[in-house]
Length: 573
Image 1 (cartoon, rainbow, N blue to C red):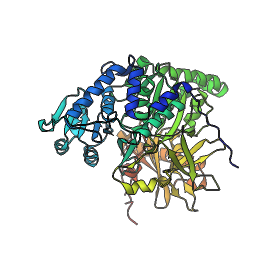
Image 2: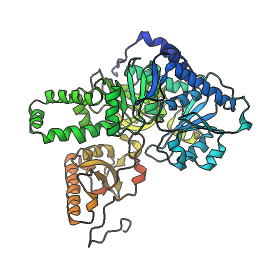
Image 3: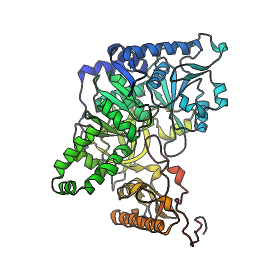
Image 4: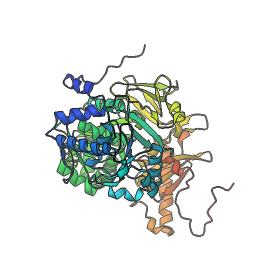
């Protein structure tokens, strides 16, 4: 008989009414602006676009009325193309709180992607920032009923013929469509994920159970608001609990981020692994290695040293941090072990756009298991399908109020991932321990079939490579029956400005050999790599910093041809 797993979530009877009441984004909007009216909801770190909850309500209501005058009614699609700002959330609620459907777009989309999304979603309205104006084609502009500057809410395009005051709105129902979020992920095939009001509100309730936040908390938004992780676990979650969410006016580079954290002193930040991994690998660990005193302490009194380092990292993040969420990709186990020893308040989560996003989560104040994505999120059912009896690996399938309605205008791909009983097939392979903690192995469509029929997960080999000194990032794939690693070395490890010089080729070959030797000494016999190719530029990534693998399926690296050596044509036999 299987062991019964006890729910780790606190009842929080005081907040049960909020969970029962907030079943649509209209009710979330009404609840928050009524109960937290005098508190600050959103603002820039350096001032500007500052709204109390009462001011936010007034702004949203007036904007919705302006949309209605031009015939924008419930069910109409309203797109947003902008960098993060408080007005982004105003535009979001002006759509969703009144039954319209929001179509958020990431700020790094191309002009072609903007055209495809606006056309496919049949959006009538576009909120756009001046910075993004160059991505809007004249053809798309002509098709829009309204084009609105999101920074001033000035109507840049509005035809008098559309001023009919017939944009009827209604209070949405829980199962009404709230958002269409387009995601190409790492596969390159864009899908419009349809999230209902129930989906998003279930995630807000699950976020509170995973990491309770309150009205005195300060959120710092550093990821794109158009990504479901930042949108639902940070930007909207702060609103749900009456907290204040601060937004950066510029991209979250260290020179911008560190002063912002000192000023805001955030208690909650949602991030991706790459950010904290860079802090540890590029700053903390080299500092220890270069200091004789710290190196001695790391060897003889590591617990004491790591505790002090943890306090120093928290101080760098403003000194008041209680929750540092890590999601969007897998956290390096070596980094996680270090953070755990430092008593840094991190917590790993796992989810997908299709699940709004939370599926699993670790809690800051609960014991952590290195490499685990945690337990099933609040009111989420999980099981493993097609489990391999030898190693316990199976595909994660999910059911609950968090699971999407489907892919917009794409019933074929919807039926491939959603079965008749409501289970969503994630395409992620994992194992589960006796206490209900899950451990991700890799993606099914990334899995490489080994010579003996065994599954090889390139992500596991990449983790080994990425921990080698001088390596920035890597991608492992199969080529001509052997495993090949594409490796981007750190700039201080390999100077591409010296390409074609003998010294460069000597350093390149030494670096490649070091990777090949270490990996093949560390991994199992079926995961050994046969070749290492160097990349000059960083890999192209998604919003959560996952490599777009499909872009590199035919890559042979960027290495220059050595003078006097004929380069072999990779396509020749």
